[in-house]
Each structure stands twice: as structure tokens, then as C-alpha cells.
Image (cartoon, rainbow, N blue to C red; front, side, top):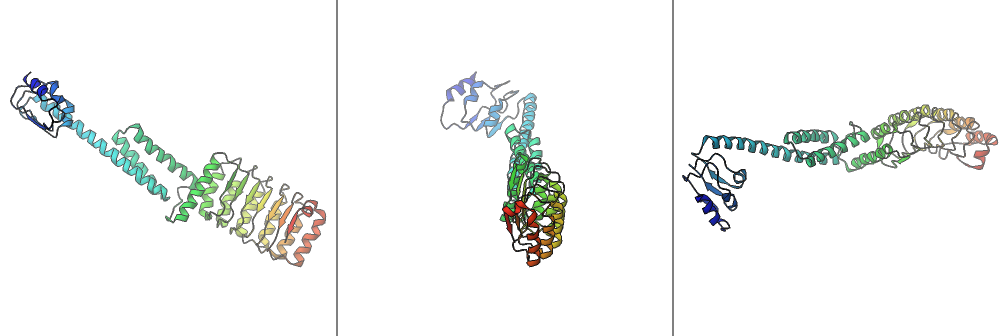
Length: 359
């Protein structure tokens, strides 16, 4: 009662930060009125037969003297300290988890995906130890889903040398893949310089699409390896209507792989392979396959040095390509012999006569 009276009289006293109540037999518990002294920072309660102390006071005070009280108080304080240590450890794990999430997003931003995945896993482990709130777990989950989307778009093998142009390339592939996965029917990676590795990553998404009709991969530094993966991914895609692959470097090897794909695709209407390093041999393989594709309306092979031999091979298949309306052989080294072979076949090809023939 005396302690309560003192506390009530001191309540609201500005500046009181220290109070000594040693040896006053206040136990077994402190008066509630003492908890109202919120300005206190130091409280001496030695030798007061106390069995417990309000937990809010333990958290509020910087100094608290509880020596020479009861065994029950000693046990209470021991449990409290253990709980406090456990809570402190959880808070530490949570802080470290959030720090790792930040590091993971930084790695994600520069396409260092192995490092981003490692930080994400470590962050998830820390949050589990912290028994974190749903909001903290949600941050890790958001990161994990973003990494999985990018892995699906680029492949886990895709690595960046942190060059800004390469980072833009990777993000372009990711956007294209997300569009395909969302059911898009057309996709463009025009002049993104994705190279063979980018084409391989892109091909993984193409395999899963059954509705993609229009693909533009103009000027992307794609070679035979990338073309081979693209061809494998596009096999049997009956919805494919347009395929633009000009200004790459697929060569005869790449066009041979594409030809195998085109033998299973009878819906293709437009094909552009301009400036791809094709020879007469590559052109011959291609048009031999295309004769089984009566729906082809546009074929562009400009700036591939196929010469008279290649032009003659094309001419021999014109009759089978009855729907062809545009044929571009500009800059292909076609001279009089090749030109005459094509003109000769035009007599049997009404669509091309009325359309466009460039050589």
C-alpha cells in the first residue's frame, strides 16, 4: 500500500527516471500503480520478497535491481530471459532474411541468377527460423516466383557478364516468353542480338505453345546451333503462319534443320531467310522441302549467294509452290542462266506472275 501511494503521488512527475525501493517487503507482486511511472529508466527493488515482475516493466527499464528476492522470482526471470533471447534471435534471423532478399533482387537485376537463387534460398531459411510474419514470408515468395519465371524464360544456364546490353537482351527474352506462356499468338525479338544461347532459351517456351502464329527473330546473331533448337521446338506447330529470320547466320546447316521442321508444317505462309549465309546447296534443300507446303505465299532469300545453281533449284520447284505470290532473290548472284530458268517456269505459275518477283 505504501508503494502504491508513492507511485500514485509520483505519477505524472516530469523528469523522474530513477527510483529506489529496496528492503520494503513489497511482495509477492508489485502494485499496478508502479507501472504508470513510464518515465522511469532505473528501478531498485532488492530484498522485497517478490515472486514476479510485470513484463512490460522489464522491457521498459534500462536498469532493474532484483537481487535478494524469492526463488520463484529467479525462476521467472530465467524463463523471461530465455524467451527474450529466443525473440532476439528470431528478430535477428528476420533482419538477415530481409537483407538477403535485397541482395537477391540486386543479383536478379543483373541476371546473376545462380547468386539470386542462392540468396533466395538463404532468405527462406532465415525467415523459417524467425517464425516470420506472413508479410515477410510473402516477400520471399514473391522473389522465388520471379526467379522461377526468369528461369523458365532464360533457362538456369543463362548467364550475364553484367554488360547492360546483355541484361536488356535477357529481359527481352523473358518478356517474349511470358507473352507466349500467356497464350500470345505473335512474338517479336527484332534486333535483340540474342545469339544462339538466347535462341535456345527462347525455344524452350516455343515447345509449349500450340497457338503461336507469327515469330519475328530478325537480326539476332542466331547461328546453326540456335536455328537447330528453334526448328526442333517448332516441329508440328500447325498454327505457325509467319517466320521471320533474316539477318542472322544460320547457314546451310541451320536451313537444313529448318527444312526438316517445315516438312511437318503445312500452314506456313511467309518465310524470310534473307542474309543468312546460304549457298546453292542450302537453297536446294529448302525449296525441295517447301514443295510439300502448298500454302507458302512469300519466300525471301535475298542476299544469300545462291548463284545460278541455287536459282535453278528454286525454279524447278515453282510449279509445286502454286500459292507463292512473292519471291525475293535480290543480291543472290543470279545471272542470265538462273534468271532464264525462273522466267521459263513462270509460264506455269499464275500467282507469282501477278505478284512480286525480285532478282
